[in-house]
Image (tube, rainbow, N blue to C red; front, top):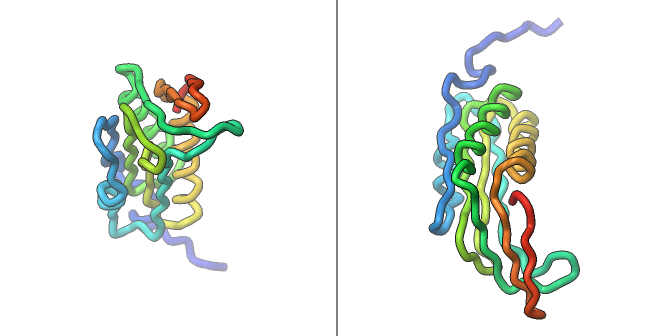
Length: 153
């Protein structure tokens, strides 16, 4: 039988939410990655969402994100749910608002955990819940001149 190790590094950190933000300027993967550093973390998972050149069979030229004033506090609420469920050592999430072009970064989220499996799962929960629950709306502009609003994220 293997010994049970109860090392403090195997648990989540006391204050793991390091960076939450809504930004009007370009996002930085390096900034999010730097916020995730923790000596007890054996796994860091990042998700980077970019503006793609198509959606629903139509060519996208550009898009704009807008948000409700509560968006940042909703991001924090979701982050707190994730850290309550997983042994998160550090968590960071930033989302862009304003006009973006194809290829621009729209969202960057990440978590660090003692082990990679938890890091992957926590990161996926973080981005999925942000996408479904945070009041951020996308206004897509298509090559054929049509436009479309899409719900949260």
